[in-house]
Length: 116
Length: 112
Image (cartoon, rainbow over all chains, first blue to last red; front, side, top):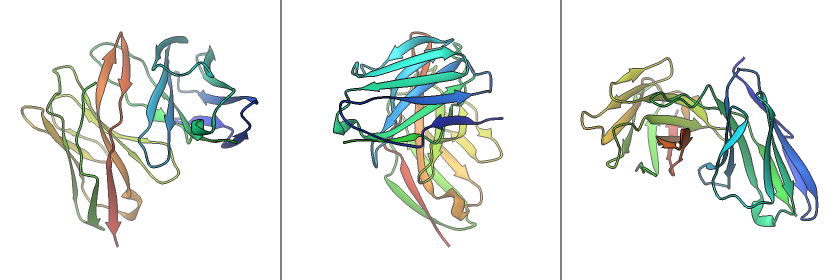
């Protein structure tokens, strides 16, 4: 099974709402990632988790809060978002992050978020 | 972060080979070259990656210049399903973590 699943597929939320995005993989991968993709732009890295610990935060505003409850699951908690945060949020995983080796990343289909 | 340069768009005829170029003149010795593609309304899909030697897999071939300042992704026989945005990426290494910084990519159109 080489699938990364993301739920929900679509989400509409108001600026005062709290919501969460969920990502799951069962490939035994130890690295997981959140990306944000605006329309007609390339994906931009937000967070990297390695062995369930947050290892990279690309200066993402605190209204985005990631969480990795276990090695298969990655959440992104959203609170007090702005309309400009509307985008496709992509989750990815890779086998590991070992020095001297490079692994492919497997991407989910994304959650399309609209903030009203 | 290391940078890549790709043409904004390319066209190719169906069932013909496609050569997608990428320049990465600032590449360092430990940077891997990755290629991903993104079909409409889907997440990116891994295509191939390499370090120094040419690489082949079931999807494509990656030809890396001897000085590693450029590379070419080769689709041997394009199909309509290969129409996508193709991203050439240099893998960054950040405090023990691998990260991919996507460039603007090449939009490939396949002509039936």
